[in-house]
Image 1 (cartoon, rainbow, N blue to C red):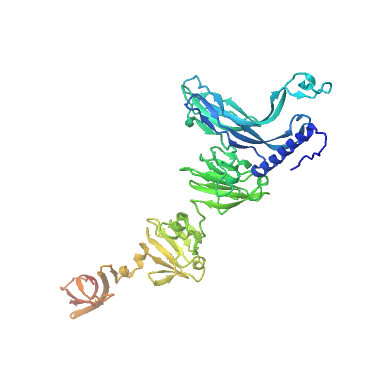
Image 2: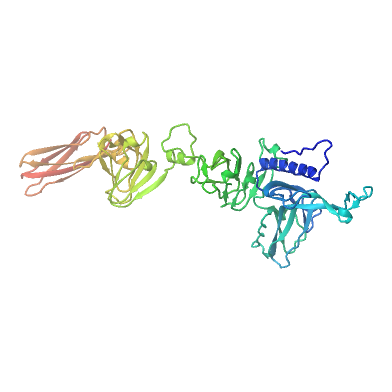
Length: 557
């Protein structure tokens, strides 16, 4: 800071003291600008109801810091200085009261705005004694003996104004706009018939630029400079640096200040603590944002309970110093590292299917690794090509089903090395699903193995079968149905026999039934049968040569 120099024996000049005052003011103003920045800042000046409550409110003592000319008018013998501006301090030493009136119309309400600005005034007028060169023992009263009073203090004050809004139906009334050069302090809502104003009627003006409570230096430690409640979409000013910006309504967009106006290392914390909805924090102009996650490179969406702290680089961007998020970063599919898993990752890896995909059109379509964990339903004529086994980890699953009544839905391998297997029996390059059947396909490294689902029952040993003219059907209980068919030529006049073997040898046979077809002509034909665990024997006596066709069905285990 500059300091005025005077010398012993020097004739004192008026400007000596005036320059000392001005230089001290400039130094203090520059210090305040370093601490607060150059945007308007409010300290104190809270709006409160009177005690006892009445239709008046009071603005408590406080200060305003606002840019103004060094001296807008001559400062005694010093000329005005409007070429330079300083962050000046306006002081309100005593509370100031305002009287409000309720609207006269029933069902109406009215919003009142209290706003503040820096005001510089020359005050404390006094008739001062002046040197009388004609009679030094008799001082003049006022300049040249005029008797005129002159201001003795150039005061930095707080100008407060009460601005009445237009009364309207309750809920539709609006708050007056802040006058240029002023900042909003509070909004007071008064309804028709109201006789007292309480705290419930008073709300801080949105984004009011409040200085740190308890002093700036006290806020440098592990505490925010203030809590700034924001209920509407707003562009933050540098007054939000160091503050906790609490967004109190859903769907709002909070725009950060230009990074170039915020010194390197200064920060702003934005939080959204509502029960539902979200808010968006976005960049200013072309500034860059760097953060762990979000909806785009230029903005970050905060859900209930989330917060983010952005730190300015002082030039053209903001970096996230920390995020408290209920929605985390979902690791890449198949990630097996020690990263924290989100619910989205867990869903695609375990338990419920991660999605559903229906393929109704006839033709070939290729499944990709993104279809892992999904349910795929195939319509008539659909041919699904499975992902390469090498493109997904071992253990990856796809659930495939055929629509009801669809008998031509097909799954096929991709490439020439993969195969499809059911119940470890056989290897397929393609496989036709049964109508309404389904199967869980598991990658076993080069093989898509069918597990679970109704399709596996058709190839399971528990339901093994041979659906031929002579065949069998097994059931999980161990019961076996078998059938055989055969024919033989019978010679006339001799006893003939025909042995038919069961496709499988029974351990125990419970029952058997036969059917045979011979012509009964001229002479009677007698046919008898004998069955065992291994087969059945037909005996025939006929007087005429003819052909025997016989069928046997047996139940056993």
